Length: 181
Image (cartoon, rainbow, N blue to C red; front, side, top):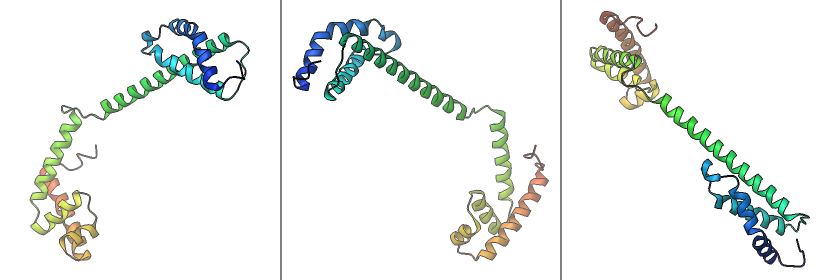
């Protein structure tokens, strides 16, 4: 490549001189079969040639170098496509595995247990029922006492007594150790 010309002129000369050669080389790969656009590959080749000219590198045999650039660009695009497809398949599989089947035995069993616990909680006296419901919503004792404007000790005592009453109520309802299996 001629170093006496400006980079833009040199790029234009190379692209004009080897445009047909580049098109033939890119078309050899039958890129639409792989879901790739030949124009994307040609654009990538032009960018790589521009970077080469801009860095003032000398190429002894332009056709061989252009063929190498095209091969590299095609391989890079195929790898990128494979990586994207793999990521898509992984995400799809993750979504499928996380999706809950409404007829799954475990889901039915969990719903039945939730209903049973809800009925047992409703049997508790009012003050203990309030604390237990908030505790089942993953609130801590300090959060519950703050929410209800009760002392920490009162909240803790009502919680522990309520849990003991809940356990007894669940035993009476026949759900003892059912979740531990």
